[in-house]
Image 1 (cartoon, helix red, strand yellow):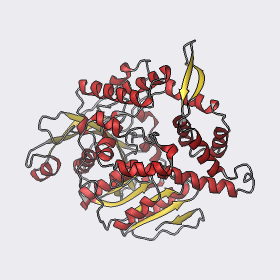
Image 2: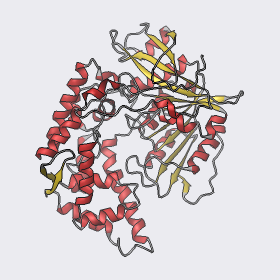
Image 3: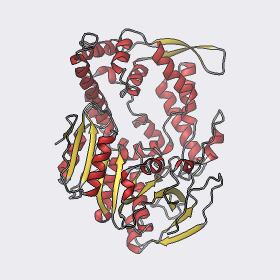
Image 4: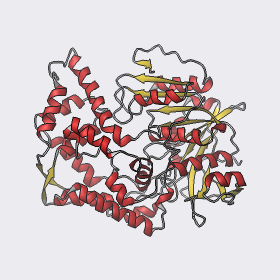
Length: 511
């Protein structure tokens, strides 16, 4: 493969094409038409990726184009970059192709070992920024590190992001319209816009991304790889293992969401559990214990008391002069809490909300609504609808609401069933949703107060993967980080079957 280093030019160019024709066997694995020959290829490019600007012009307010990504990579390392070109929908003979960028940060060690492949969570997060961070990590000492952008995300072509849903949400707040109704209206507009642009939304799901990763490994002639992912991509990496375990040496999973978990059934309870752990900590705190006594009970009582209540806040949207009298409910207040889960001031924020001091927090939320584009992107919607909505049990969710009535009507995930009824994409394979056994080694870490993906998921994975090692990080939330986990990752990657001993009372083995 050609070695390329980073350049400062804003011009994007792909100088070399390497064509790969899949074999009959590979075609049968990735296509609904056995034996069909599908052309995949790698385009080797200068190591720079600029955001796809097609969607920028569609914003109601012009957005500032982002700088070229690779300007931030440590140029003392050799890098190799390119696009994996694959069908948008492997189940359709007439499918067009899409381009998925990757960056390989090359180890300087001439005796390098099996590489590491990373892809981001979300679903919908970009992966390429990891290439910058890993260039300062010890992982690069012995191994090439590959950052691979999932289909539909920020630097992929196409990036399936439009602003119809963002605009519908803003309209709902400006006119005090039903938020749920406008979410559905915005979703319909969003889908129509993407389809008009020629996007086949049924091609954006975990099954297709799993096939993308295996195609990339084949194209780069990688026979053994270490997979790394967190949250959604933790489950994605398990699905990669399930599909074809032969090339997988080990896995590092950070706060993983297993593919066999129905997150919409679980996440509200995970949030409540996380809060209760926090409440226990602050009540036993010798300094602030009196201030937060019975906070768990006061929280529950307050939010139960405002289930059907409406509040109003005078607000002037930036760039306008008219004062809006904006309606909000318990749902916006729960949003405030969830958005501050890792904030050390969260107990104080909850206390102030219970006292009725909402304005500072709701004003910040409205600033985000009107000044940012925070609605889910098309890839996130498609993946959640294909992976989750088609398999969730509404009866189970109603059982939860009977226990915690103030959570009913609140959508803890920004993609949910009624939106998916509008989006209308087919579900992923039932096999992908099934647990499976594997003897591959894995390192799994999670925060004890993970509000999204419960630490219990680590035990569920270990049940099926006896060579996995899992650790609970006290006082941490979703997506752990820091020196300790980085050091554990390095030790595990070096010797994945060796037991990891940790001399830290805040990190405990989790069984």
